[in-house]
Image (tube, rainbow, N blue to C red; front, side, top):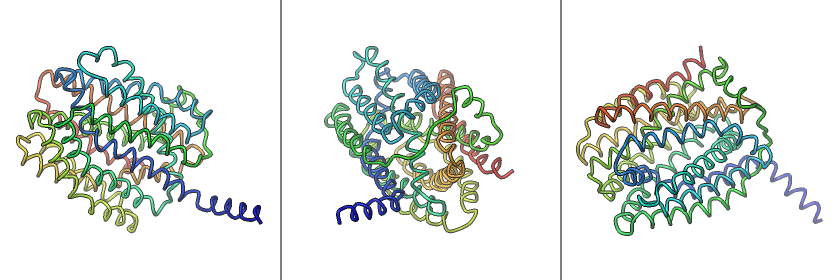
Length: 401
């Protein structure tokens, strides 16, 4: 009787492997680790900006260097991931994230040059062991025809947490300092790291060497993805690094106001995000149509941000940009995950190419911005982000040609 129950349990587990895998991945990444990210995402660049004596070209160059190091160490990291398993790699990445925020906790202008190299190692280690295993697992644990909804659910969760995180983080910093914020994030990341151990192990193996990986970046077969992800990474560099620092300057260092306005803007977009995912799954060709229109409107948002001068401007332009961002990044991500699912046993290799293309885009855009800010105001560099937003369309134009 016991062996029969065990057999039934194994069969049920096999049948629901994808569903269970997505649930565990979703809880670990989007809920627990996502909560930590929601608290810190806007304020880590600002914290480093303050620590580097409000010198943007140093901060921009540092984030550019991080992306370059990720590209260089990703393939060796994947060969280590082969040995320990993709799900265990998520745990290893989690350990690096815990160490990263432990360093942030002790980082200051006085300790900066002692802790900068360990910080660089932990950030790179987290990226190497986290993002490809996560992308592979997400692709394998979701199905075509439902992926848009799953992507949208993930984005909506980010948006929901993003509606609470910034104002809470701003309050914590204003009243207790960055140490308290990083302490809260540290506790969440410890829980996330433990929960990653429950994610099922996918049967994948990374087969390419470093030179073969570099060669395939220029392969016509992957051109749509590499060009699209390069543009996406270039734009993400602005969203993740440049925009928070620009807000810091607009609000004259008032971190609570930054958090409050960010919270209000993000909160309004949550319901729309879920609607978009359902629409994209239900209508054939909707991803391409939404991306084409959304990317153009999204580019306009970056141009408008050049002229932001007040809190009211931040609110209205930010709200517009967040809404049109939904119609850009949701279909873009759904198209990429569908392309990943088509790769068969090369799904992990495809994910590595995605990550390398994206972060090389970040490296280029942040390097260019760091240099330009020596000569022009930070806001005028948003023109580059607008061009990158339009270039996202290459993902389907090249793919369908």
